[in-house]
Image 1 (cartoon, helix red, strand yellow):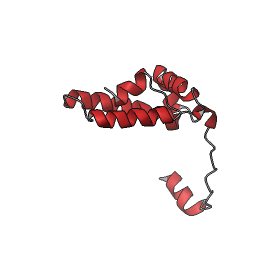
Image 2: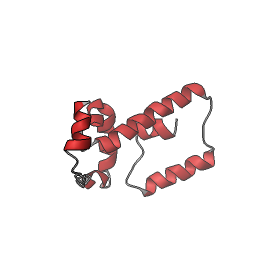
Image 3: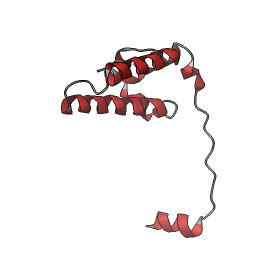
Image 4: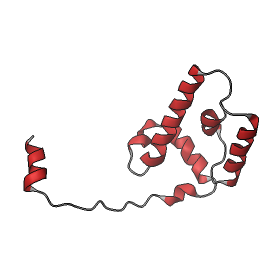
Length: 106
């Protein structure tokens, strides 16, 4: 309670958040797939400032895909939609690997 009063009444100066520049080296061709492999290899990346913005959503997507697999039988997408997703991945810097396949193409 004391901390709240200090912030609200005694120390009421507002500080703008600092702009954080994401490490764009991750998005180089071929680099992202290797980074994704690292993210799935160690949970600690979800808690590291430079990596959590990708590692945590990937882990969440993996967990969600596993939950959906247990709830629903069959494929969530038609073959045509899988072809579209595969084409989009080929055009991007993300190349298919076992982790991406586990999330999207299960």
